[in-house]
Length: 131
Image (cartoon, rainbow, N blue to C red; front, side, top):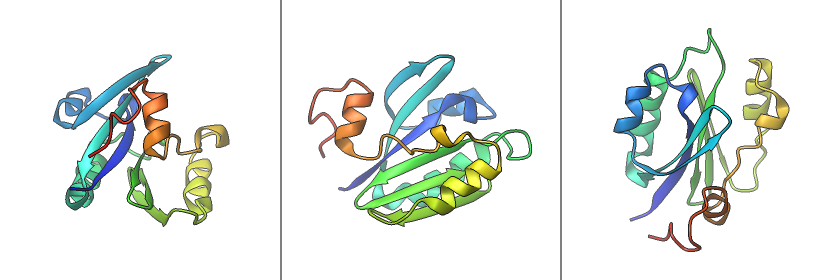
C-alpha cells in the first residue's frame, strides 16, 4: 500500500489533543515547536486533510500550514486552502498564499518533501520509511 508522508507543526493545531489522533511516526523539536512526521495511506489523504483543517488554528488568527508528499505529489494544507502539485511543478501559488498571510518566505520551503529528506530530518535510519 502506498503512503503519503506529512509534516505537521503542533502549534498549528487549536487543540493539542488532536495530536493523539494523528498517525505520528516521528517527532522532533525546533525551539518551542514540535514537528510531527505522519504517515497516511494514499486512499485516506483527503479525509486526513479535511480533519486536519478542522483542527488547525483559524487563518484569521494566524497562518500555519502542513504538507504531505509522496507518490509524485506535494500537497500544502492551510486551514482554509489546499494546494496540490506534481513533482517538478511550481509551488508559487502555495508560497504566495502563505506569504500573503504572514508566513515568512524562509518558512515556505515545504521541507522535507522526499522520503530520504524526512529520514535525515527526523533522524531515522536510512530506509526506515519504506513500505
